Length: 391
Image 1: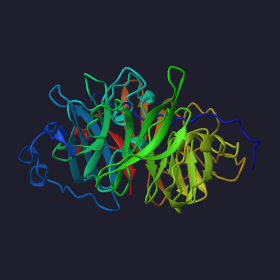
Image 2: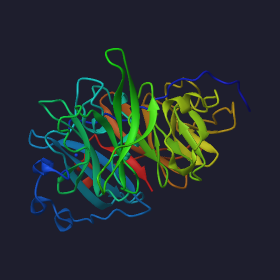
Image 3: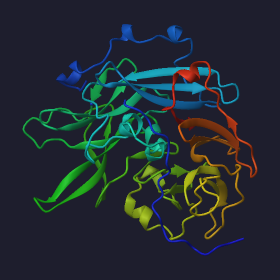
Image 4: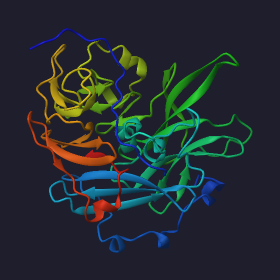
């Protein structure tokens, strides 16, 4: 069954609210966190610091660090038993951009650590996933100098040691580098920065990268009139995308972004907002969670404008209608998080009044979701935990 094309709407998948919560090759090395001997060991946490390559669900949560900076905790879980199988922590430097009252400096860390009054107003879990390398050994960070307002990009390791890739500005222009995101293989940090087009009149936003090794030279990659979204690195080896909730299909051929499907560029070339806007004017989803298979995506609504968010599958054929609702109707508000690698199950966040819960459901229509019980180590994470990967 088909329906006529819908006008494009900017689709922002609403995730959960998450609470409060670059040593340079120069002298910035003093801005490090706890020493290695202060970091919890694998034996102390009772689980491995190595994250499995498959059969694991990964969560992130941010918490204050005694009034200075914050600590980001990453955990791996067995998707059947919910036994904790891996754990890592990243203490952030005091100057890390965690909350900010303006649109910039921008960082996906804010999606994780900045308080939101409504869980539906939280940011993009795909952007949060892009803060980390493949094995969760390093985390991309933006820092801001409180005196000059210079913003630098870099990363912290699990000990809290901060490596500044931007480096000293000397007598040059004040750096304004934002939106740090890791290349999936950990070889580089992607970032955005602003260029003055006409002094006092207009500016241009640009996407660039800095390598983690070598001289970290800025490599300019793409220009955009306005960059309003965090950098998302999706797929393998990784394609940088400037759009909401970006996901590459399992076969690596198609990109789902802002409800539209477009071809993935060759050689990992970045995708800018103009490329998304120029995609075929057919919105396949009233809201998007990710890919069920190479030809089917999971939408958060079973019909356009579905306030209940009962989820539905829809193929990427132009003008295809969403399938039947996947979960039962209720007075809950539901927000999709991550999909299993085989496309058969997914995790979603659900609210009802003051209740905040996570559920696992099959992607088959008419499924009954199963609540993720808050017990054991999972209970320690609280309501602000976000699911960022299932592999």
